[in-house]
Image 1: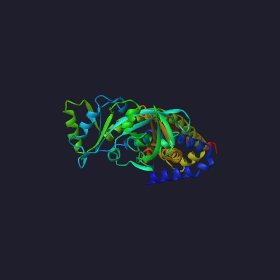
Image 2: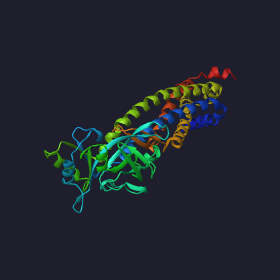
Image 3: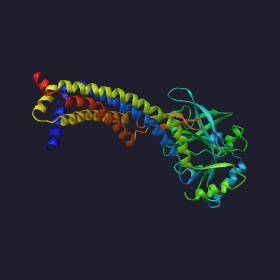
Image 4: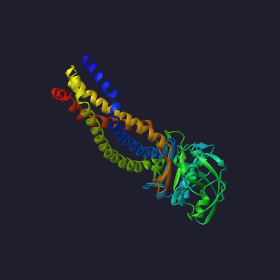
Length: 394
């Protein structure tokens, strides 16, 4: 108990004396704050990208692609195959009608609002049941396109990010002028980065004949996926790969997210080294300015280990303040910040940065590590400070 009381007493004294060392303390806090800010900003990009793609997937929806295709752009299915897929065991039916959507995927150039430079935007041809397959999609402005007409609806994120996609506008893609007749939302998923139109019209505009690239099928239940996949695998008319939609999007997100993380962690590590030196400088200055004070405490009976622990606590406290400030600033500035980048199908995905509680906790952990490492050597020096030598300076 005496040892603990000593630590509390010395730590309280150190904290109360921080205003006397405000300059060096602020330097240490700002250094840690910058590390946590950059850490949270970079990794919130990866987290937001993952959330946008994965939220588009469902556990009771299957997506079928040509065997070996790594994305929809590389896939190809005939009209006959898509019809056969729709009638496989395990597919949910609305009466006699299977709830499926055979879809075509092309990329069009649309200028960005922020830069004016062209970006690859997904233009998706869908069938009538596309809204039933994707349960969260809803028209939020205008109306649904009419089958057989050069009309399209645009995802809310795409409307926000790109020029000329406002409801009521006309834009030319391929050999056709298209009328934007509505906008849709999909709970913030990757679908909101896309433009949708009637698949038959898109086939004609881009001379794709009767071919498609994927089939989405709503299943009777999550457990029906095994039956559906087995039926396709055992049918010699098909050479296809079958995925749960959520797993498909998670796999699509992994490459980009891994790239961002592989960039973010080394940057954070390098900045953390700088922050550690800042903490070392601050704590060495603190120990030097309090040499007589520390020696007096030692002369009064305070043990060297109590001085060591209290100095580390002081350094960790400063780092914690910096970490909390950096995390709060990252949340205010970056959470919900909307950008776009290339996704797995070489097309733009519009997404929001996501500064999550988990990410903030990781940032605080980084800050505490910086505080511990930055305070260790100065704490050892304080604990070893010769009492007689310091007292002679009085």
